[in-house]
Length: 378
Ligand code: PMP
Image (cartoon, rainbow, N blue to C red; front, side, top):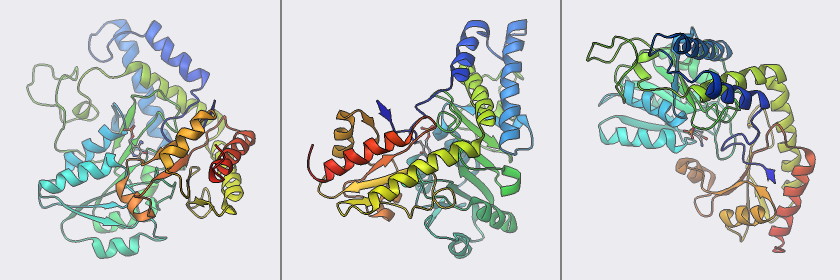
């Protein structure tokens, strides 16, 4: 099978990640931070080391800022619902995944004033300057569109937020481990990650790095600290980490970061971008195939490519590719505003997302398959 659905989750999980997960299950199966016995302490130390690695990797101020969640969606919900109150202003982009768009629009029902900027703009700060009001409390946007790969210039937005004293949150589900991210340098207050993608970790893992306090909690419960108190602890990470955490998954995240450091994030990015570039160039000349984006990978687009074929619905194209042993995602990609902006509400797109272990031959196969579907030769 040719797996080209790495934007949904990385198909390749490194041997070191698998070993780390299985070692956690085999030798570290004690609840971290709960009981005081040796194994529980060792488990807590292992978790702490992963917090340190993530804090270093993403330029945060310290390991206590790193909160483990069940996925990126939970991390986003913790931020949006934790910092916004009625009459506060929230600005998001039109490229948001439903992980951001749905909580944002449900908060609108509760009186939060939501406005939307164009994530396709070369310099989004021009529009943001007009959208910012005295009520604007948070700008929250995706770094990379999961539909078409468009990169939003988060460093520019971070600088603007600092200038205006506005909080800044980033959905880095598609970019964490793929593009360079330094929270301190980019002025990011809240970073939400999907380690099961760019960090090669198991699914069911998520990370929130919070540089600022989150006043309201979405989930309260046992933290292993201040056990006699009926109040949720104020301190991070405990404030947002109630209940038993996913120790095997967290160990997998740590091994994933190590793998990335060893291989070199830039090397992986260059490899995936070169594959996208080849596919983009090969498909561009075919009049029956629409290729989204401008082919400027790394600088303007992350390495994933959306295409559509005239006369064939995108979910049908994906099903036809699946019959040929090629795994992609077709149809709609949980990002209604992005589909509207791209003009793909009618039919969606076929998203092709190469990963570290894909090669030129894989791209050749998908190109040929798309050509024959375009020529109605199934
Ligand atoms: N944001 C973006 C841009 C995404 O692509 C995704 C995953 N499809 C998410 C958020 C949600 O990530 P998770 O599935 O880990 O909650």
